[in-house]
Length: 389
Image: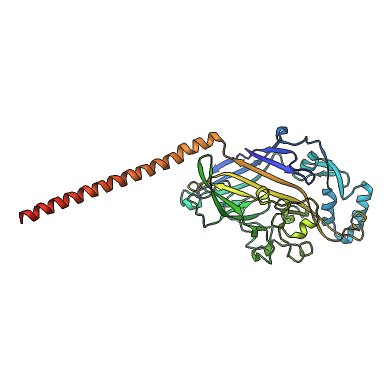
């Protein structure tokens, strides 16, 4: 069970949804791998929301922003005609439900929505190592959608599928080694570094956080150069804190960031009023039990943005001075081991480890006692031999 909070720019937080991600179509393969898919589903939970889905908010017009990038500038006269004919604008009023889950746009005359389609869709299939032949490869992704690398970035490094799906990792974690995982939501692999040790419901866990350099500009983190696709929008690849994922979203101008552009360039926050990045509220983290590698608590926080810019032809964009990456919604997806499973986990793992430690000390004590007795016996025998001599 995962709780997801979808926060729109006008309010914090807005409606929440409860999402279920049970692995489905689980198949154990002859080559010591396991295949599965992750079904997508969402139901509205009124008790966790500050308002109903029918609340109306002002939001960026997804259709206009999308068409701005999809239609070449030479054909912006067509876009101008589409906007005027449908009486569309750059910003419009829509219900929260429409923005998140879809509505029929009057300009495109087709469904538009941030998470459209979502219900009854699947992520995968994933093919991961079972660890039968090598325990250090447990849960490591072998293939995703039948491929061992991505095709979005046209670069060997950026197209790598590294690590696991973040639900678990190989056992016996080390604090000095980062955790690698692949996120299909943002079409790339990520890494997290150790921050601190915590106690979660009586279980010792390691907390790993995304490193600030994950979304850094290529000028600070050269490894990110292959993620820079549009030099004009990213100010010659110097813009930090956003990831252009249009390559894996049918060329729609979608940019992913941390909420409120956390760790992003100052210019991103200057373009939008009301943003206040806070690491405690906006960071992504994983709490992992180090012996088993199981993720027992996590928070995945990402912000979905769209881009629009200046145009000499489109009336509603003539006063826009520069390319703007505008927040549409940010998501706070969290999950934690419940009390019942925590008790089972402690009973089956922690208690047995403690029992092994007790046995270890008992055996150590017995060994020391035997050694002392042997030493005393040796000394007594030597003493008797000395008297006889």
